[in-house]
Amino acid sequence: MVTSKYDDLTEATELLLERDLEKHRRNLAESSRLAGELAQIDGLRQAAQSDTGSINARQILGADTLWQGWLATRRAEILRHSAMARAQEADSLARAKTAFSRVEAARKLARQEAEAQQKRRLKAEADANDALGILREGRAQGFS
Image 1 (cartoon, rainbow, N blue to C red):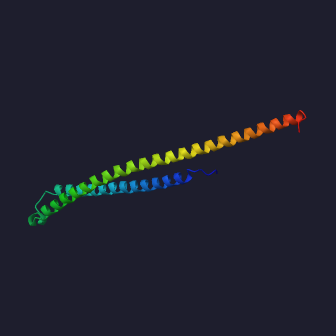
Image 2 (image 1 turned 90 degrees about the vertical axis):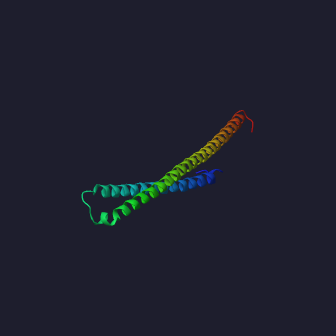
Image 3 (image 1 turned 135 degrees about the vertical axis):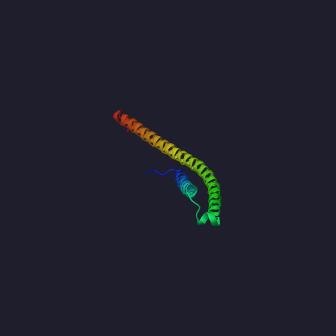
């Protein structure tokens, strides 16, 4: 393969793209983890609220109120973290898109450079063939 002055640029932009994509994957995983935790908390809240058939020891001691308070506090905390995770996810997606655009631009520059080199090489070959043709004509006419 013919090397180009854009090879290093292309390699660097591809590395930056991989870095930004990995960061975005981590942000997606964090958002997913928080969504799962939120679903779990909501399930616990529903289970605790549906158990209203009889007064039990937890209700007499007030532990159910503490439990509901803890669940509400934890849910609010998860929602805050989830909002931050979504913001980071949007930011990392924008960065990944920018990195992808840079990679595509670097590849386009490298491709254009390769095409220009190919055209120059083909022109040089055509010029050499023309020169050989002129020499052959000269020999055929008796010029040596």
